[in-house]
Image (cartoon, rainbow, N blue to C red; front, side, top):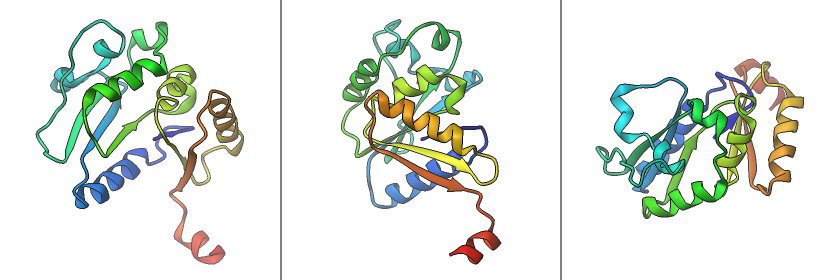
Length: 169
């Protein structure tokens, strides 16, 4: 799950998807992207394994249906390419999940990293915010990602005012 700008409601969409899937007893791995370090989550950060700086990783399995991991966007994320094949290897290593939901960041924050991670998955959901997201920016992101092989790209327009929605639909 990604976006073109910050504060589009990605976390809300991710949490609602997780809640609905967990209610169906689906096994879910949720990977959240951290823009700031969080010492409480350090043992569940997967960067070392992804960047081949470590040979193990830990998942937070405190919830039996929703396991969690974290990806920290740090200096290494900007200086070292994360290959989609390495992300796919990670997904193969983590085990048997019905769904893996990786909440990314806004596309232009780090285009190469965003594309590398999203192209390793089966589906990309881009969340836009009504009256703030740019159609041009979304179009640019979709085309760039499609050129790299990702074809299952879907959009969610969030924060649509009730009056606008009721009037039009």
